Length: 256
Image (cartoon, rainbow, N blue to C red):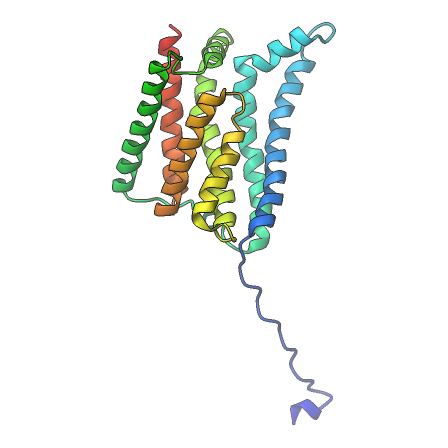
């Protein structure tokens, strides 16, 4: 027998390959903090760069001017995208699941695209009607200032790229991609994951007042439901981009 032959030892038993696994509730939450921290550091680096370029001593007025500048905001939003992608890659790699599969980066049918566009348009128009009836502006006031600042800096095109491309991509990858995937396979289930990820996404928009935060939450719930029904975040990225584009054009129009 080969097993008794010292010249032919028995073959080593290889352990079975590790099966792919999804991060569940706490793993998803803890990695989310690191992903968000990476995004924040990328955006902070841009702000620090412009602050250091200022002439003379630092002042609160000068710091506020830099942070509120359309150019600074545009570049900081764009800088957040590669940091989020890198952090997501690091978080997903141990799961042994392909990056695109983990996040739901798959296309859906044109029927679903049309349904999503119609649903989003109806939802946003309903909020605009409520806003007008309440005597409120239909767009946040600071957005007009940001657009004018970006135009003065010659960076209006960069602001559009930041709001219509960069922000929708990394926000959807984070909220409807990362958070939903892990939390939907935890004790929360799909609907709990839709609600909680939408709340987290809303908290990321604390620059708005309570009224617009309610609108953001409702849009997040719609995007989460579409993610659940279609399995695609390309759809929510597209809808998010269209919503931001429409809001940018509307703000520009109302700001004159």
